[in-house]
Image (tube, one colour):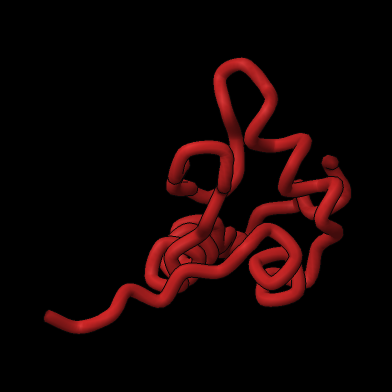
Length: 72
């Protein structure tokens, strides 16, 4: 059986280019936000495949001809 590639919070934050605190904040919101995570007892881990999929699902493609790029 292949070994799962699990990252701790710091490594997952580096992978995504966000701070560790951002990931901690996202997962403690109610309901949790951000990428899926795995809780192993008191430890939290992130699967690389889940991080990659979360980024892919977060892509926003602006529509051509729309003038709402200034809206935030």
